[in-house]
Each structure stands twice: as structure tokens, then as C-alpha cells.
Image 1 (spheres, rainbow, N blue to C red):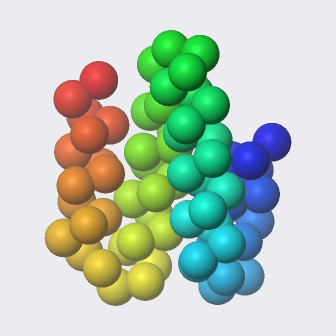
Image 2: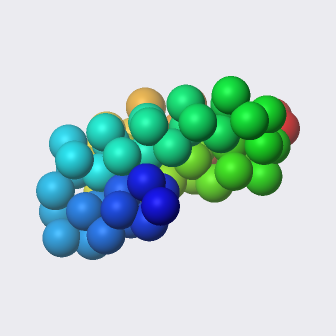
Length: 68
């Protein structure tokens, strides 16, 4: 649910809210040890930062998803 909200906020250029939702989703996914969901969160966070023009942070999140 939080990841869906993050995606929606990202699409309407509300990046801070998108980051908050994606972070909540990541926290829950880590507690549940859901590798698939963690991967999705890292990708979403990478997309958020990419759209904000923060390429180095974006690459960090995309790299984390590749490391899983």
C-alpha cells in the first residue's frame, strides 16, 4: 500500500511524500524480510531520486537492488 502511494506521489511530482511512503514500505519489507518487496522499494526510491535529478543517490538505490 505504501509503495503504491509512493508511486502515485512520484507521478504527480510530490517527491518528498513519495520518499516518505517508499521509506515506510522499505522499513516494513525489511521487518518482514521480504526480498522481493525490498527490491521494489529500492527501485522506487531510485526512481524518485532520478526524477529529482539526484543521480548519485539514485544510483545508490539502484545498486542496492542489484545487490539483492
